[in-house]
Length: 379
Image (tube, rainbow, N blue to C red; front, side, top):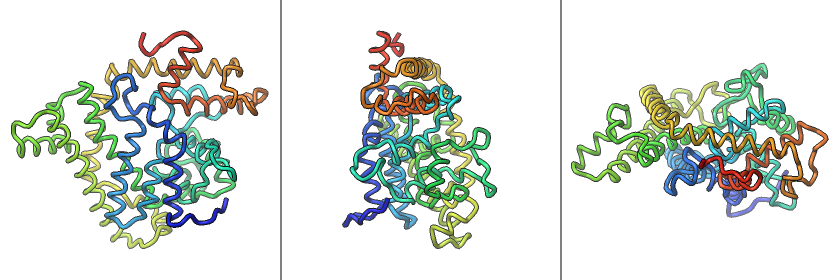
């Protein structure tokens, strides 16, 4: 809905502020990035990751002359829809919701900012600008092709209902690429999690500094640190290596995007959307280095038995909670039972899904222990 301006803030700055003050943003503090909270206080959470993404994104936006407030708003909001327990929780919730339309964290982010946040007297959600909503939904590219067929990750399963419903009343131009600001937020997500997962993986002992030697980008950064600072301690070696990885990727994105912009002759957001291909991106050389780094992290970290074992238990938590609430709506908190659609299985399943998706790791574990007198994550 239309709102009066809020000077001295721009509309995009107001979006950013509303995202920061939302309940969903605060809950990211106790949502898993890779490691569950009990494994240590120094690992990234969804909150610290989002802040780091925003820092990277704002740096790139400033260098490219883009709107920094819009870029930061999109970076801060990009993980709002994630479940507890990282991608393991999302996979399990999607499996449980398959009969009712599935679960998608991008669609859940849209539900949060347009419906589930209830802070303002005049509207549900956060009443964000069109540009922020568009970037939130499409930051990884178009969702449909020119004929309206689902595109990319939605090609087989179709668009999530939440996106379809919202786009019918507020056209987000799903067949077009998003703004340059949204593209910057998306690639900043890649930069942040790749670089900082090196730090977390080393801290957890899943691999050693020596293992980085043969990994392009990380190995080059490590060699530079050891050459410049012989005898430096491990902690400083890791930090200096990670910050060189981040700086190298940021510099590459800026240089490559400027080359693409000049070649395409784009001068407006509308031209960026109609370009037919991403404007913001890595050079071919950096793309390959990034792919190799992701492959290294996948094998050494994301698929490490220590990680997969604990995430298998986490999926059980999500499954047990979903089945319990589905079987007995009285187990839901009173404010989640109001307007409960127990006579409509699909709508009630979505209500249960919304409740579980909003949980932090800690709250999900507490609820599981309360309902089952069992703590499956530690047994």
